[in-house]
Length: 377
Image (cartoon, rainbow, N blue to C red):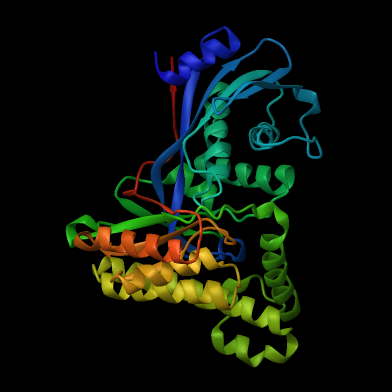
């Protein structure tokens, strides 16, 4: 019996019907453009959120967390709808609501994706629950539609206006590849991401400046992009070129212009990154990663002192490229580093944080990993 099965038995007094798992993610490039119908290039990481689930014969939903012992959230399924107050369990309840589940269920969640680190712990939770429910109730929902449902859960139930990248890669990630995702129609293409053969590693730097994206900063950026789309009467940022943006600059506020400039240039950087990966041109990839950070820092204004310090220190120590990842305002950065320079980069970042009296950073690496799965017992 696995650890989560034992915890489920201890918590609910019965064994689960199945266990599902879904990973967090690192986005190699393509930040804040999933809600603009752009292309993104994330990959699933090895850290996963597990959920053990069991059907009930009544309408009661019980949710517990291995990280919050002795607390069980109990609610009738008929009460699960947007507006219901709660905390972390809203992500699980949102998945129940979005999938239209009408029966009772017991869920035990065991999260191993670092919280607030920009590695999409929320999508890992939503997707693990969605995959569990899809299997448990034989819903037969496709992975793209599960991604749409879990995005709906976060948008309409939790109240976070995220795009669809995080849920898509958590569900559809593949070992050894980044996922080129067209956020307009959710078509995907696996792009081999073999840094090891090139003598490189992708270092993930958790600044421990933990963020909370529901505080409005994320929503404000998305609203700016929506305003540009409305003013220029285009379907999405995907349909805007840099020349056309400059030509229409007088129609936009200064803030709208720089937000749109990030979106347009970031979409182009993603496609250039795909070309670089196909050619195993990691020097060009590093340059594109750097440009992405500068754009997020200056045009999107979502970096923070800790993220900038991590990027600057990584580059000073020889990284080919470094940038913030995730929604911003804290979280993690990535650095594309030669294997022999890993410890030098870690030391450089740590020293920079000590000099600025920031919280000590955490470091880890991950190769592209598999997406969500479920196993019955």
